[in-house]
Image (cartoon, rainbow, N blue to C red; front, side, top):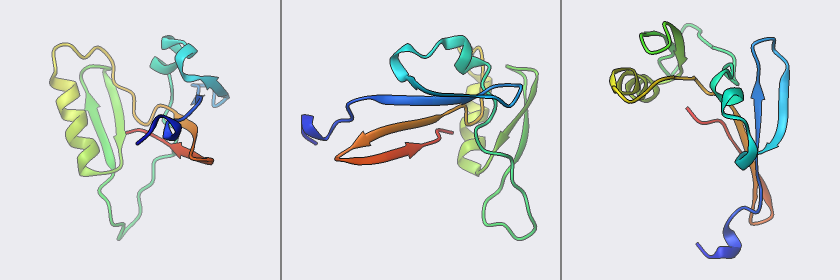
Length: 110
């Protein structure tokens, strides 16, 4: 990857507890409290016959349920919940947007 392949500006959008959305903040200047209090970007999905194992996990770290959409997410959640240096856990906290090689890329981290 060359330096011309790197994204110029990375933006973040966050859903708040009241369901309002703060959109397109510069990643570098996004307030930590905004990210810490983010609500999951995607809605929780579950239906009979689905191909992935979603669910909720009671996280002692936040004393609340945290959603996950796959066994991989659950595994990471378990590790984070038991790590002594982790102070907060947020499921799918935001939407990242960046232009890479002329194309808009979007990603919702686990």
